[in-house]
Image (cartoon, rainbow, N blue to C red; front, top):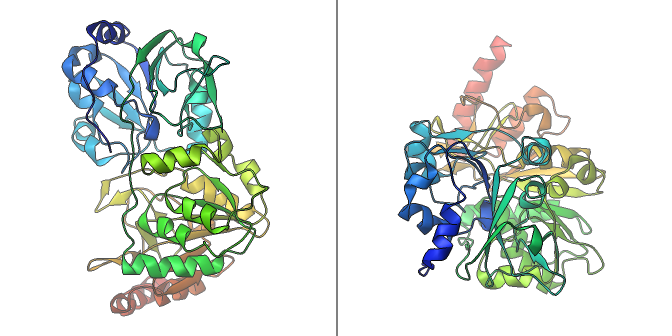
Length: 419
């Protein structure tokens, strides 16, 4: 995350604050498109949020600011729960809607229109068009239907050569806000993540279309694909490892490589903006198009997998820490894709705790057992596609951490007697 914004002219502050009033329904661009210039404005005038209802697709690990905490009568709706929002969630100022990305896209396209859309855009080009930069997940779906549009115009924001745009004349209020934007960096992989990444890479054929999600193991897997050839990007998000693929010759030079968000260093985001197509979530997460893509390989992670193949990506220790995100969309599309596979890259344990468990005890199941396909840990690969209940359990126990296998086997035996 990058902060450190300079002072803004008082006339611009007043223009922004004049757009807020009680009862307003506001869409705020999230993920890498969150306009950092808005934060100090609202921190300095928190009363502007009294009675205001914000909706934003804020992402754990990317967005770390709690707008609902600025005023007791502010309300915020999200689809995943970043840790920074925990206190406001417990105070019931934050609402979480547990929706997959494809469903969020439908909501943004056809649900009640926002009274105000708050966006971050580049300056207009010669044709008078502004870009949303390297984050076009939902803003292109929201702005045509919003009643008013407030845009922070950031000249430092990389402009994709191919990506969604908005006419400058369609913006009701514009604020010059050149400065920092959201950036990040992949953490170095752990030894377990590195081993998982190698196993994942061995499953992906040349010519596959690939998607990777949040998490250290999927990010590590990208770099391990550098010796592959004719790979095609079909991912909701790309991170630094995708540059390794491009520079190693792993990507198909004749294909359209599509993503909705580039997340990494400013240099990586500018580099990606010059090369790939940026599309909204209805395209990057649309099941029909992805399922029709041959050899679509979805590589994601999870917090827990149980012996039935059920997956938890939302809960840790009984507390909500995220959301389903795009995992259901990509898993189902990969299973339907000719030759495709849905891979879960999961370290076998988190400290002393096994991440393969007998049965999920979470309030909800993020991915049902009917969507189970491949689970990869540092100890091996469990292929659950078309497998029986017993075969699934045996395969998952075999790739659990060795110190947990006996306990898992005993638990399965007890559960099996109750079937």
